[in-house]
Length: 402
Image 1 (cartoon, rainbow, N blue to C red):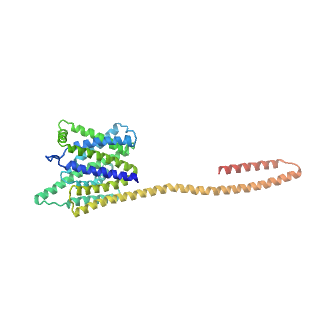
Image 2: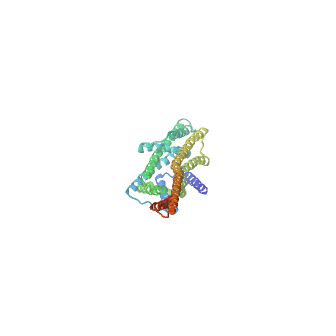
Image 3: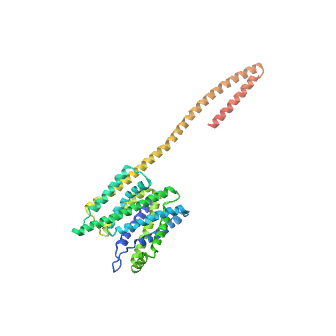
């Protein structure tokens, strides 16, 4: 119970802090000149550096396991995942310029939609019917959330705000589509190579992301790195926020992997879903975002769909466990029945042996008496004594074997 409380507390503390810092870093105005930090590649690079370092320390000191032996194929697969992951993040940060953080958080609960789509398109996987019902509920909920959004503007300004919101939602959908490809590729990597664990993926994927984004930033025709360093030098508060943001994200991933290994995916899904809902609440009340009644209803529809998904997963796992338990017990019952029948057969054989032994014993006694009366012991009496002794030895062997 203590482990569970620590895991849930770690996920809530670090990821709620991470989400709050993410909104602050991407939307806050720093300094007297009210400048925003818009250098998303630099932000992702710093986060990847911290995450890879924390992942290595987790494997080495917490799990006490050696690092994964790398070969050409593994490097290729990790770079593939890293490239997709690095390509997805900028779209999410750009979306925050057009939509607020609660909208993006709610839209990201649709992640199962692109994941299912990419799995069907790339790997021809199939899903049960309830999955499509869940996807429909989540999609309708997010769409309604966007349509029911109120605005104090009117006329052309209101139309422009709606267009910006739709464009921001489009950027989130692009981010989710690439994330779906990332998750599908990760699943394929885990299926191909059982030695790769989640911690290995966390560490090596971020190492490869750091290399890829480092090459991009060191490009002499790209001024982003120099501009970001200049911004951080003049606005040191932003550097503190970025450092805390990267650290909280990396530590949150460690608690996610530990919870997954300790309590399973169902518990982890429940915790992360409630964490996203708390993220929306914190963003609404802490940063002053306003939601109307219809938007709250749309939010409830989204989380109802996710709850249905969690419930169905739990029910299917219980059914599989019951089936496996039944299959395990069937052979045991058969063996027990056979074992119960064996003593009966042995008893029958023993009774026959006892009866035969008694018959031979009576026959031997009669023969010995007749021999003694005649004053001789003939060959028949010797044969009977030998047979009597043989029957006793066989009886002893049967009892010992039983």
